[in-house]
Figure 1 (cartoon, rainbow, N blue to C red):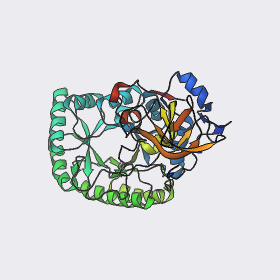
Figure 2: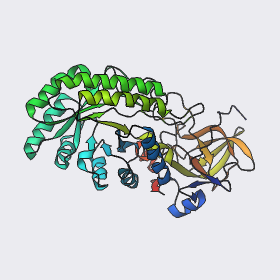
Figure 3: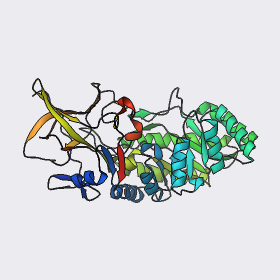
Length: 411
């Protein structure tokens, strides 16, 4: 039958009743009928509530939680998250529109990302949100646009530090990066902000993502606070905001363990009084995306064919990498590993077999599960990919081969 990949631990956040996964308290088969088509993404609002509550209980009470919309910009999800967190971070004018539609106070929205276009920056200034400056030229553009609107733009400086978040899935700081202003260039930029009379708010220091090692996040926070306090000496006004990014990871693969929040909390509790003693007006923000929504979502596709090729079983579905690039292993993985996958309406089943689950695209990259042991499935059964609440549909090449679009629901 060939070599089998290790079996994942069960995704216990979704109950299984009568061998069928339940999302939002609804059996998967019933949910599929209610949605009216497959494939689809479903996000469970109960799990979103629980994740934010977990963080509120674990973290120091004065730490602000911001949701990075890029993780999952589905309007219904953003609307729900806006009522749970203290602010939103956007990375485009499109995301800004979703954030404003959610009713979030513009002063609690920040705009990050390199290469912001002048129309996007103009919209952000008009809305009154905080712009995370990524370069000296972006600063000059923001100042010019502010003058044209007779408004004083609110800005922070996104800092590209001289360190990175160790063992992170994607490194966003340290060394040459398109993100942020190199730490050694920040003092000159701060002086220019003062000359231009912009409303300086503080610093955004983001070093990496998808990290499951608490000690690495603790070290990154240590160095972020130290760097912010050094840079504050050159600030053109009070430092009111320090966004230390996120980087909190979730388990996807065999051997992964959930992030231990206790050491992170203890370290933040140590740093907060130190920072406030030096910067009395400071608000400290954790900006999280994947950690808030990733485990609350599933991707569901339907088996449309079952075939055996040279002794190996392939389950061919109507979904794949065009909807879920990350699960196919083509979104940041160096070595492809399987996401947690199950036959959603036959979780245990009466028979088990080693199969590969593939999509309908004409490419060998279109794999949702490679040589995994699953319950025996046939045409019409539902394949569910767990840990799919973040970087799903909008991070995928949805136009590839012009297959039908995928729906998204919040239940």
